[in-house]
Amino acid sequence: MRRILVFILIVLFSLSLFQSVRAETGGKVEFVLFHSETCSHCKDEIRFINNELKPKYGEQVDFKLYEVSKSAENQKLMEQYLYYYKYNAQGVPLTFIDDAPFVGYDTDKTTGKVMRETIEQKIAERFPETVIDSTQPDTTKDASQTINVPLLGEINARTFSLPLLTIIIGLLDGFNPCAMWVLLFLISLLLGMEDKKRMWLLGSIFIAASGAVYFFFMAAWLQFIMFVGMILLVRILIGVVAVGVGGKNLWDYWQNRKAEGVVC
Image 1 (cartoon, rainbow, N blue to C red):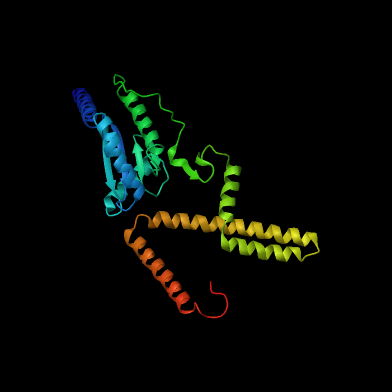
Image 2 (spheres, one colour; image 1 turned 45 degrees about the vertical axis):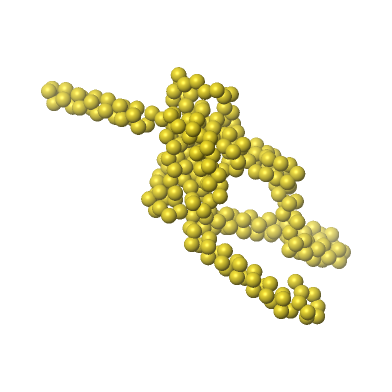
């Protein structure tokens, strides 16, 4: 009986100690940013944090910034956050405001605004007695999904019509010189056909094959870019190779500029 009482007292003491430590270190809203020193969007968010967020919310928010491109420990910490919050992301900037994740950073008026509103919402939940001079935050907005589209301006990819967005992106991508020449070649083939069934079959196969190739090509590039985005040496190597190949092509053109025929 005495052992049971001692055990209960130890448990109660441990719980009270944990609560006191939590109140001292974890009472603030947690703001965690994983960034890379070569990421321009990361620099924009850090500048927004230092100029806008810290001066206003420094007493209620604990800001923690982790650079991941040179620190394997910080990369593991980012993986732990992703695993704990059941979130899938590989790029930076990656931000967690308590349990609210943000991937990417657009501008102070879009992503920054939603972050500020999220912070104010978390502060209101954590510190009910704190009065913040702002309107009620709209948590339905997600600036990480906001993109700029010519003619349309800023749109939210999550709420915008997916078929219409697909058509718009397809039209923008249609101004591709290589794709135009392929389309002209296809049209010349179709115009010479007298059998409409073969014409529809060839056109349908071309459209389906183009869509599949574009999908796999873009998916592969997306994974590659997100992987390379965190390795500075690989990015520098790719840049050097690209500049070298471009310079070689310009040199070949200059050497053959007076040659007969068309030079591309």
